[in-house]
Image (cartoon, rainbow, N blue to C red; front, side, top):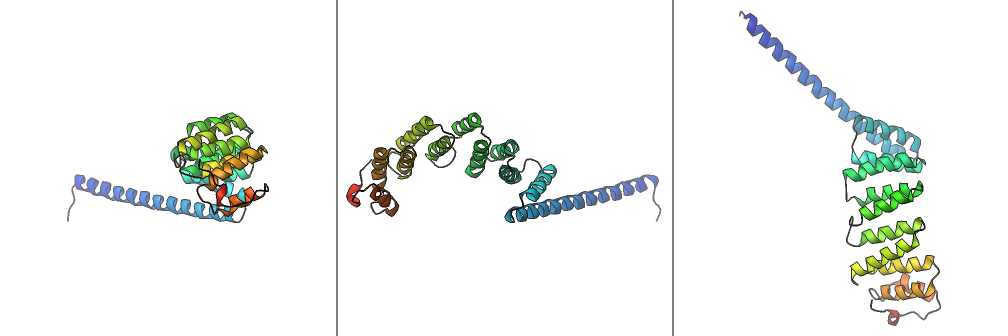
Length: 226
């Protein structure tokens, strides 16, 4: 069979194109396998407590595939444990920006900011993310972190907002306020909010034990409707 010059060129191009596609597919598979391998090795290093190795592996992973929310988060958590707080905050912020509403990523970032003594950045973050998570939990989160950095007035205000928003549907904000009162050694306030919390479950052993520690005779009658 004879081929014209034009036919030969078309055939050559087709073969070249097929080879290129084949090579591209192989390269893609290799990269995927490499990423999977890095992921597994990094996870194992973390599990073994080898944060130095996990740091190197997750860093390599992100070099190959930047903007992976999970990898950014895992690297940020490793960096926090290694005391690299500024780097950690950067990666954890990327993770949170990629997956807004993921409370685990948000709290990882908040923890890094606390550890890095970046109080202004922390408080700004907490205000901006007040609505993330279940209803009312943003205020409780704000109060918890505010206490950690000594912002007690802001913590109290957030707890009052959590209680107001909850409208007596949940014991959590009342327990949180009782815990807050305990840190201030305000016994009267702690007892008041423990009795409110008891309203939701009059047989709650933990709350009854706490009330008993103040010398009170415990029982369902201590419950007070919020």
